[in-house]
Image (tube, rainbow, N blue to C red; front, side):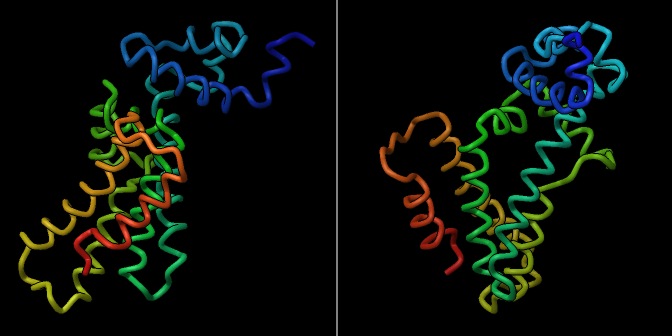
Length: 202
């Protein structure tokens, strides 16, 4: 059995997994199907059985990352049925944990040279790409609608609430991923303390 035959069954997933690693180090311009094939140990033509070009592979990579991110947020929300404040806070914790455990995903979605490419695909309504930010916004908006202290007609207040919540969890995430806040214990203990006592949710 040759290497290519051995890899055939799981080749698509291997291309996605190794493609993500290459995108993280090479960027969009340095990325190619030939390079991914080499890492996977298959011929340079093998990836074309699954992807017509590098953009199709990048779309598959983005789809996988966005799906996993969205699933982590929804799992957090499901832990607090009927408690929208708890949903927002647990979702914030899930946000931090997801990217700290998957730093390449953070770089891909926010700091890579293809993040704008991904944003463009999302803006164009690409069916294969989920929108985790909409999951985030929907829960924040439900909270705002239920909080009597928030004027439902004040769009600025809603935007401030959303930006404040997102900014808090994203800022914590970046500091942890980049190692700017070294912590030897369980980082989630600190994260949960901040988020469950903060986020401007009272």
